[in-house]
Amino acid sequence: MNEADDSEWTVVHPCELVATFLVPLPDPIPLPDSSILPTYRRLEQAAIRILEPWLDELWLQRADQSAIMMCRDAFAADDAENGPVNWSNKYALVTSIQFHQTFSDAGLRLGLEPAMRLAHVVAGPRLTTEEKRNALDQFDVEGSAGAPGLRDIGLGAVTVAECRVGLRIIGELPDLESPLTRGTGGDAPFGPLESDRIFPDEISMWQWRKFPEGMAPDSELVERRLRAALDIALTELRTIQRAAQAVRRSPTVIASLERLPLVVPVVIRFAGGIGRPDGGAHTVLLATHPNTEHLHVPEPFTDDEMQTVNDARHRIDDGPFAAHLDVHREAHVALTRLGDYRLAALLLGISAESLIDELILHLMWEEGQLPEYVARDWLEGLDARARAFLPARLLRPWDVKARNPIGVWAQDVAALRHRVAHAAYRPNLDESRQSFFGVNELVAFFCDRLASPEILKKYPRTALALAGETGLRKRNAYTNRVRNLQNDASEVAWTETFQRWRESWRRTRRDQTARVRVPDDRGAWLIAVRHPDGLLLWVRHDRSQHLAIEVDVETGDLPAGFVDRLHGIADVAHHSHGYTLPVSIAVEHRARTSPRPKAIWVEDYHHVPLTGVMVDGSDHRHPVDIGIAPTLS
Image (cartoon, rainbow, N blue to C red; front, side, top):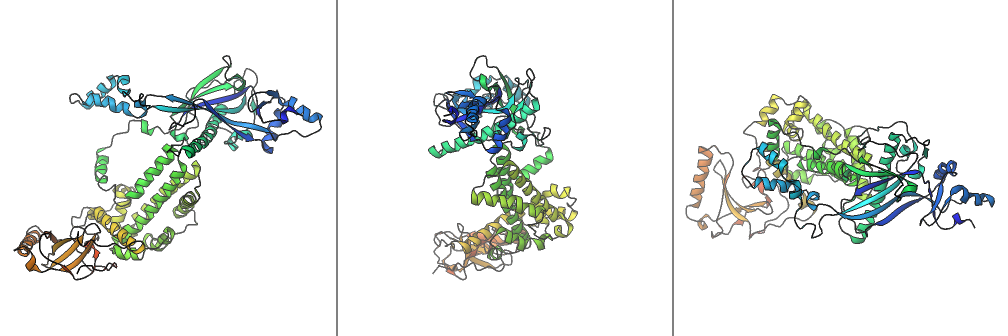
């Protein structure tokens, strides 16, 4: 029996250049120190055909490394027996990963070093900006970074994965400049397509490249294969991390190219020289990604930008389109900084959905529609809503099949989000990037439409909310009319009013689709509401549920002179100060009165001052029945 037909063998070349990447993991992994986990790939016909011309130079090594023989000797026995070469137990080694459990300075890893240096500086006398910089530069970094006791309690553990990947290059050790930075940008930097570019994630499909004795391999070829090899190593590394997480069920940050340091050390050796003192090695740093923005000192804001920041910070948490913007930020981080393409695709889909729904709502708010009616007529399904509500308002058809911004959203954003959400699909970098660009294109399309004269005339508030003053100026749409409206003191506060309108819509929508609100009779306040025309209404206000109901009150049960004082306060506000809204005063709970309901519970903005939602201030007209009957007796 042919020895090579027994057990499992890998195909090797002792002079093959092997890259060893030293990759620090985001989280320690609970594998015993120095554990080795190899990954093998069975050889398929296409890969075998690539090997056949090289059989006189290749070797077979038993998987446990207990034996090695030349391929020509092993396969000669098969030829002598007139039988085909047995490839069924022959494998290609994809990668071999050894895990090292190490420690690093916990203060540096946790980002404490700059904060600890600054703590020593600011604890002293007040310094100018320049004096502060000089003091920080002179401060002993080592003395500040070693947070006492962190190592003693086990903080600072780092697992480093030593990932070995063969490059299928035979030649001298390459003379490479360090760090290697080609290939970290978006454009393909290398020449004609080779097998490692056609099959970058499948080493067994790479052609062997042999260079004459004494000649170093082409540096571009080496770096290209180094980058492909790093991607392959990370792919296998992630499978190990996910398997370890499945056992321990601890939250684990998975490695990705974007989560690596800006450079990782790479040791390039001959396969036959690994572990030998005379084996030869060349160590370089390999740049991993171009994400250096977070390490550079940012260009300080201009005065105009500072004004924009101050304006935006008051509406960025819950203002119009704030949810879209925040989720888009999270998606951008997931895509470019975390390398989590699945999370990025999911968040980009959510960001676009939020954008479309918020646009529909803001347009309806600017039209003066009541939130209760909008909730009643709301359609299920985002595409159905967009198709029904947007074409007439944006004066463009909602065509999801064309290759326009709407079609790009449907095909590259929504469809990908659907696959991720419902099938746990794991997109690649290109798919997630296309989704990112698709969302940006959709935003630009909406801004362009809102800036068009015929739409801007009807929806200037929505145009300012989405495109902003800067976006309108860019499109030559910041007209005198828009500027005057923006500075009109008689306008309601747009951001706060729309926020309340949107929340009223959400509450009413939940009443219709989930559980109807139940008013809190005992906790509801009794308030007197005096309108500018002298009309006095009595209202019970459940602030927690945002509900109000008009009631009758026996004024004789109220504190003496209460009604007269109320009218006096309102007269001063309305006549002396020019206040145009109703004035309300809460009746103390100890007042002995039993209000009786006159109507039904409605959204509180219909009765209670300072809760208005309508763009034109028409909050106190036509209360809408939302199906919540009175419970007072």
